[in-house]
Amino acid sequence: MPTIVAKKAGTCTAAGCGGRILKGEFVEYSAATGTRHLVCASAEQGRRPNLRAGRCQCGAQVAPREGSLVLKESPCDGCFVKRWLVLCQRCR
Image (cartoon, rainbow, N blue to C red):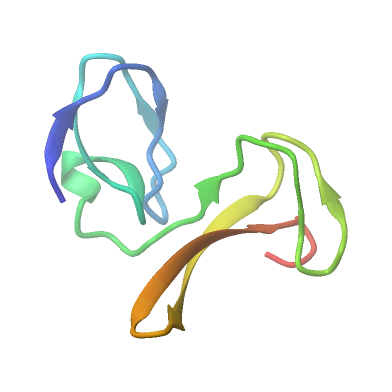
């Protein structure tokens, strides 16, 4: 994962951390795992927060900042398609 400087405050996505990331802090970032503290870079994947409204696999409507996101890759004619799936509180 590349090391970047956080442009805004947020939350660490590593499992077991969930700590605050401050603006201007050096962090590890990738699209699949999100933003993490440098010491949390090798930790197990936690859940990525859901910032938009969406619909869960079970059909429940999920409001912004509720539930979580999971990155799923599926094969498509020799390529892979990445999709973010929204999970409600019950399906997590």
